[in-house]
Amino acid sequence: MVAVGSKCRTCKAPAIIDLPRHNAHFCAEHFLELCRRQVVKAIEKFEMLSKDDKVLVAVSGGKDSLAVWDLLVELGYQADGLYIGLGIGDYSDTSADYARNFATARGLRLIEVSLRDEYGYDVPTASRATKRVPCSACGISKRHLFDSEALKGGYTVLVTGHNLDDEAAVLFGNTLRWDVEYLARQLPVLPARNGFPKKVKPLVRLTEREMAAWCIVRGIDYLVEECPMAVGNKHLAYKAALNEIERQSPGSKAAFYLNFLDNMAPLLTGITAAATDTLQECTSCGAPTTGDLCAFCRLAEKAAAHEPVPVELVLGKGRKR
Amino acid sequence: MKVLLRNPTRELTIEGKRSVNALLAQLDLPRESHLVIRNGTLVPGDADLTDDDVVEIRPVISGGA
Image (cartoon, rainbow over all chains, first blue to last red; front, side, top):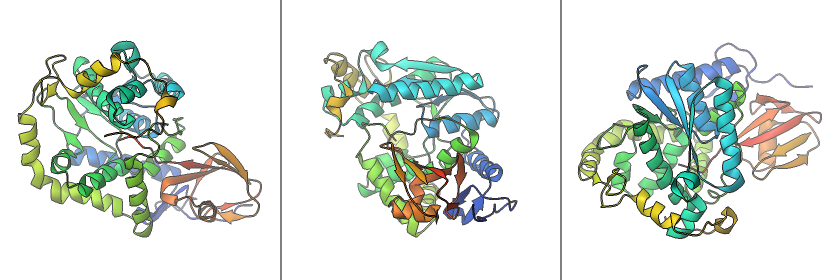
């Protein structure tokens, strides 16, 4: 026996989700409509995409990347997927299956790149070889391969599944350190220039909870388990802090990040331009870099020369960022 | 009711009718970082859960950026 619950704000049908930041409940149909509307609003406001763009979506097998791929295809964009095999044990094997199953079921093209097969290393080994925390080694590898694969494939835009929680947490960390260069670059659109493809984040107006709900309602199977190497990282601590603020004052995360974009980011544009004007080509791979060798090539050189390190050996060993 | 939790995956049995919000509070799980699926369907915080229900509490926070 189930009590009569809350109703959808739009149609008064039984609700499936409560969204305190909108002070509203929604049924499945009108929740999906809200998500589509938020994505369209982000795409239009920040001039992210046009229907003529050849889009590459960075796909991890998790909820955000599969949701943004699903949303873009549903909205009529031509979008292929890119999956990077990071070599994080069973976690990577399972995540690849989710990405492949999603693409196969919808007849979409998924490009796969394996760090171990194509570059001779994996994330656990890179972490150990460079004495970096795993998330740092992972981030350097992914960002480089997203850029290079997008350019190689002739894609005009690279899409990532960063959501409102991701962006608010990064903004929170950058603000705690008053890291002005990072703050200046924290935009939902980075234009193509100096060897970088255009990069966009269409989910910046939607929370993680909303993206997980999108996947559940749409019947998208995704990897729910957390990356074993991310456990205990600072990013998760920032998200927990922001969620506590959100609990007490719904809408705070959106106000923090979206008002930053409206009110603060325009004041920082000169800093971004100055930083990218000083870039030169990496002597090994040709990617833009501030030194002779880019961060990826330095990391790959050290990691590929190191004996492979199983993921279990690196878990819980925090080192420099 | 049977309650499935993730990260790590485990199962609990909890007796007695209560709301989704009450269950999350009892388990000390923040609403903003979890969704609740009752018998395969997403339900809001004020939905009631009973002894016959199979409930999944799904965390929604991921650590990458």
